[in-house]
Amino acid sequence: MPQPFRFDNSYARELDGFYVAWQPAKAPAPKLLHLNRALADELGLAQDARHPEAAAALFAGNLVPEGASPIAQAYAGHQFGVFSPQLGDGRALRLGEVGDRDGRRRDVAFKGSGRTPFSRGGDGKAGIGPMLREVLVGEGMHALGVPTTRALAVVATGEPVFRDTGMQPGAVLTRVASSHLRVGTFQFFAARNDVAKVRQLADYAIARHDPALAGTPEPYLGLLHAVARRQAALIAQWMNVGFIHGVMNTDNMTISGETIDYGPCAFMEAYDPGAVFSSIDQQGRYAYANQPPIARWNLARLAECLLPLIDDDADRSVAKAMEVIDGFPQWFDAALLRGQRSKLGLRTERPEDADLAMDWLALLESQQLDITLAWRRLADVAEGRDASLRDELVDRAAGDAWLERWKARCAAEDGDPADRARAMRSVNPLVIPRNHRVEEALEAAAEHDDLAPFERLLAALQRPYEAVPGAERYAEPAPREVTANYRTFCGT
Image 1: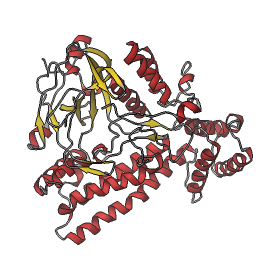
Image 2 (image 1 turned 60 degrees about the vertical axis):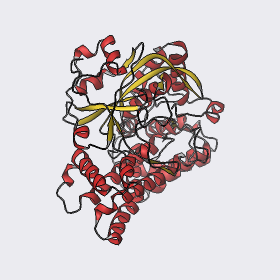
Image 3 (image 1 turned 90 degrees about the vertical axis):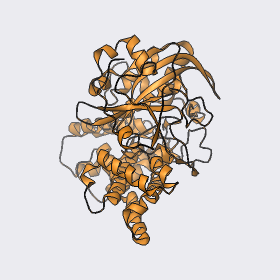
Image 4 (image 1 turned 180 degrees about the vertical axis):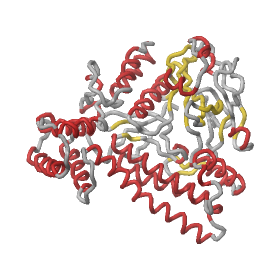
């Protein structure tokens, strides 16, 4: 096949022994379901590869293009706190690396492209529903400004896959990421006491994500610090949009700071710090409010891998690493509050702002308010239209007391109320990937071969901050009884 991308495969070239070269399975009847043309433009996808038939063959893996180097990456991971020394790409293949139009190196990878040596008894394939979910949630997160892997294409394979939830048409997702380096990638070699390979991997990660660290006195401590800061910022953004990842295993934490793997994820509606939707998270390990401490726990596992590189003296190495790990809560809190100040319409910083934001969330919880719409309606209050929020309150006295504090805080700053409201609407979305709307779209696609609901929802998610005519239904919460019984599944 002619070269659809300009590949340059540094991972395959420089990290021999970190992967297994492999080929995707052939799809019997590939059909293009989705192509992200804007992302294709970013990546410089050749025009002749965008024709539906050519794109179907390419993104199903039937024709491996010139310059690609398909590999299954090795990694380990703690899954729900239990360490698995060998996981790896059991149903994914990293096709190669592409330089985008801004000069950034991006991975292009398949998901659902068949068995690999890491499949551990699985079939390595995927269903249409979970792959289209990755498109909807990932592109929704991208439009919200949350760092994320992105979906370039989805192709139906023409064969069924069988899962606990029943039979589904098969599909392959093409995913784009800054890299697929994970905490679990380091754990794979650290578990084998292969310090040389951990060092090799760390050097590669630095060159790819933190080149300014190369040649500094403590590059590996600097890497740990950089990853921790990125994760603190990322998790803060998750919390501010009500996102619950659902499976924050160490193999699902990236070194780049991007969100990866939209399996049993969900968006919270009525604010509840204990919210869990994942069917496999029966103990609530990855509940909404647990996400910051779990991120810190995962980073501690990365630190363990890097200890032999940080300092020759074991005690000094632990002390230096723990200084970073112990700094995570402070960095997270600062990132969370920065986001909350913007969402509250505050342009300046005052010591009481953290309590104001915390009490707002406590109000949402006690009143069982929808987290997305409550933030959005606060912008109406900034313009003097209190009713849209007050009418949702069960205890108006409690709501009015908090609103008076917030109004007084806003009044302490100069500025036009209309400008404040506009600024608030630019950071408080109206539309998010509502769970029931996502499920409607996936059911239509998987069970009725109808992509229209998926395409309409995707269009709405790509403009989350705008009150677009016709998108009102995507802003509405699900009935409470639907949310109460909602569960998400891995789709593996």
